[in-house]
Image (cartoon, rainbow, N blue to C red; front, side, top):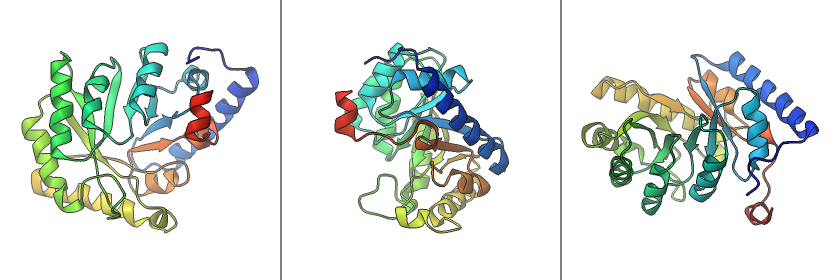
Length: 244
């Protein structure tokens, strides 16, 4: 992977314009200081370098192998977020990434334990930030913990996973929900956050909102948004991306 190639002047200017627009939108819409995660799935390292040169440090990736390759080739102070579906057999690979900042897709107590064990066994001294992914829409094909099970997963992480720091809750939400205002998936995540604060006294962040709805998510209280195409442009199909 040509991860450290210098981006062209034209491409750098395009990413700079897009990133500035997104950052300005975050500033306008946020209710609390919020984090912008630039989603760089399938994008070359040169695109990441362009955003990095402008001060962007949080980047999100969906595939473990791609994340490992990029992390090895790109600046060590990048803060990587894994935002793809977590597989138990990939936890060890993730734990080997020195600057992995967060795993946002913990979707069961068993996955939390697997990630914790891999992190501890890798000899990591600091805790790994994690978010519990919630299936706010109730769709059968959607990843995430069912709303009724969220508290038990949260309790498991707090009580039994010393290598993990529970950072917050995350949702992707449904396509249908994303067309509505207010978005019912975002409202559900806000309500869950408030319920957990009341029941067990934890203050949790909210990772919600992507390119098409991050401003709306911020207005509802998101503290972290995951934006890809609004910064880097449309992603190629997976097959085409792997050929490049």
